[in-house]
Amino acid sequence: MAAPISQFCLCLGLASLAADMAHANNLGLRAATLGLNSTGADQNGAHLNLDYAITAHHGFEVNFDLADTEIGTIGTVRAGLHLSPAADRGYGLFAY
Image (cartoon, rainbow, N blue to C red; front, side, top):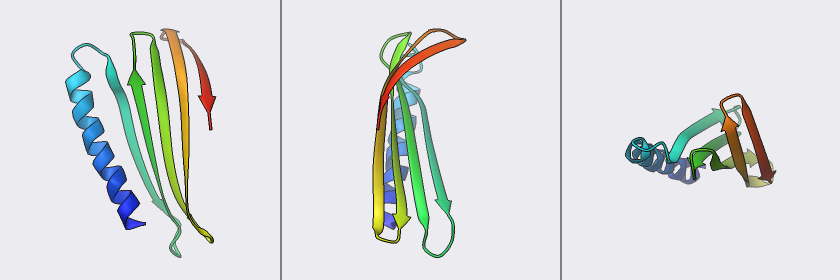
């Protein structure tokens, strides 16, 4: 599990760099979060979430998850497009 977690950390570092570069015009990477967890007995997991702005009101979000199970490491990817016409409203279409 150490190698995939290292890859997540590398992705987070690159995402932070991209966020700094895109900050000037509010387009590009808006948020990146990384979560690591351990429940003991070699049950580890990791989660990476990236939220990318395409326009001022449109964007897409991608989530990557890794989890140790009894049968091995299982990964999942979720992605979605979203529309935020106002600060208090948002709409989206997501796929798992």
